[in-house]
Amino acid sequence: MIRIDKIQASTTGLFGGVGFRNPDITNYNIVDATNVLSSSGLYFKDASELVSIKNIKDCQENPNITAVQFNTLLGNMQKAVILDVCNKVLKDKADFISSNNLYPFEKSFINLIGKEGKFVGHKITPSAGNVVCKIPWVETSFNGVATFNLYLYNSNLPSLPILTKPITTTANSSKITVLDWIIADDTTYKGGVFYVGYFDDDLGSVSACKKDFNLSSLRVNTPYYNIEPTSLDCTGTTISVVNETYASDTFGLNFGIEIYNDYTELILKNRNLFWNAIQLQMHEKVLNLIRYSTRSNITERISKEMVDLELFGNKDLKISGVIDKLNDSILTLRNSLFRQPRISRITMKP
Image (cartoon, rainbow, N blue to C red; front, side):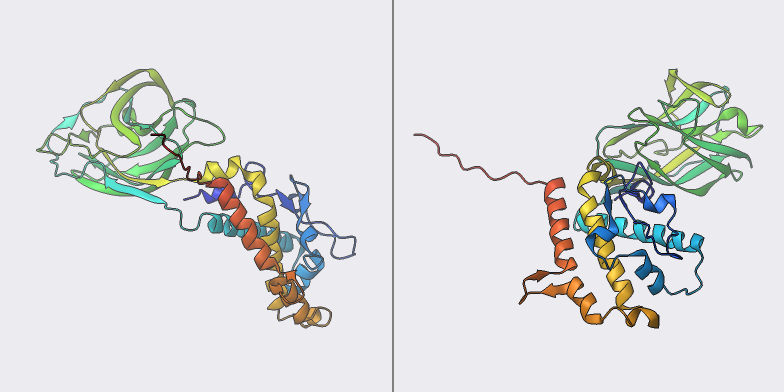
């Protein structure tokens, strides 16, 4: 998988690696600073004169488009080609590894867990790189109705939760709340361990139910991550990892855990390899925009034959089309990112 928001981000992601060149033509010199940004020095028009702001504006479907709307369109086009390139590079690469219910067994709602004025929940420790943990849902088990925040922290940012989700429990029964949280490195922190839980003072008079019935406290192991119930000292909403205490119970929490291969960091670390493919992907996108435009003004000056020649090339004339160039660029990218070592032949001496 890839984290699309990270891949498409400006500056830290691939957005703005290749830019749109602002023309000098009156009424077309409307590209804003975000869309002209080119950290690589490459521009989409460098691939072909047909990839011009004039052609894009004249071919898009809204004849009354405003400058703001047009720049939104350009930004969306760039995000789309970035995602297209990444998906092509990662074609046939496995994403899913495993999925499990952390505590799947039957439980009772009889005995309760006392509160100690701490942050309580689960410690999540990654044990391998290039994988991510997704928490699709949280199951809560409490003896009454309470509304409180569930937090996700990284140990390198103890005073600032990464994510926060309001939770409302039900009395003496389980309730599922959708989270869809991703446990992974970010630009604001690297490494460390993660803590997901709540401040037990926020429960008021409500208490968490113990997992003390048959196999209810038996935890299913998760590949690449070690997950354990933990409590931490805290001051306000700042956690302290100095005096963490491992617990035998789960503080009324259970989680769904999904593990995926993650190629986000691999792509971001090698972003300079992607500029040519992104430029070519935009070239193809704009040619198809021209090719299928219903605006009559464009067909008067650009022929279908001209567009088809750039798209598909001409073998007889030994002209390569953008589709072939793009395929070659994608193949080069795949070989660079997923290089397979050559098989060595060794002759054994007698």
